[in-house]
Image 1: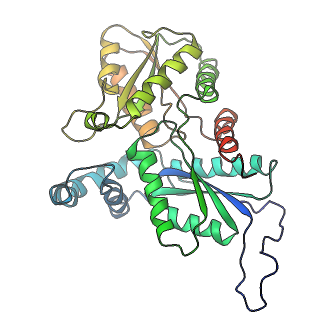
Image 2: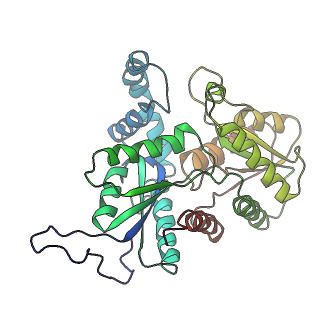
Image 3: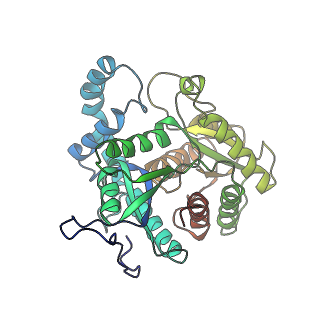
Length: 352
């Protein structure tokens, strides 16, 4: 990631002549995102979905019950359907998912920014599911001399199913290492004013490009089963607080700026209100102009580009809505990198 950084020697000095070469003295920053399939064909999608849906933090049912269902019915039908969805948003030029493209851009932008602070810092990125994998990224950073690594799960709000599983995967690699680097995990930034202001600012910037104003702005968060909240996961509360802070920054009422939860899966109850049902309800109630935002996604992906800007746009228009816009995620924009850079600098205090 940091080929442009001025090269210095980070080999430990004063080693015996027969001692293996040891690199040290550098600091790694590893951006961690959810993941993406390698391609949109059936088998690529099946591998990705099998890894993702086998994670006990994502689906916490007993393996003896869940795996026969997953490996049988679900992974027979779902890869083909999801492959078609991915194909509608696939980066054909680079032959990769947009989440991979955008996360790479974020890492490159952060590397350009952080080198102004210290040339000891190396930036890389990895995915929890699929490629580039987390383990090899940590190993690369250590071999480059990083004896301290800051893990930055790209989720403003903590959930065991996102931040938790990203940290789990990193720790699995650390458990196998003879010489473990010192590690920090960046905490969520759901209530950081820099984040709330960046989301509000991006909404204002986007709306300024339109020739109409929305009657309702919908903040759509990725859902999790309600049971996770009852077990103690703070995700719901952090989404609610972020929503309030963003709404306050926009100077809007709860009726004008609402929040919902999307992407439910399976038969059990998930966090409510549901995004698709709310979009339909608003359209049927006479709302003609709507904007929808996904503040919990640091980078655009299937759940934003296809589910929100595709499926929910159709729901709104089919039930009487007339004007619909999706506000892009912060991605590697100036506002987005202001947030990530702020978090990274804060968490590197004492190291640089």
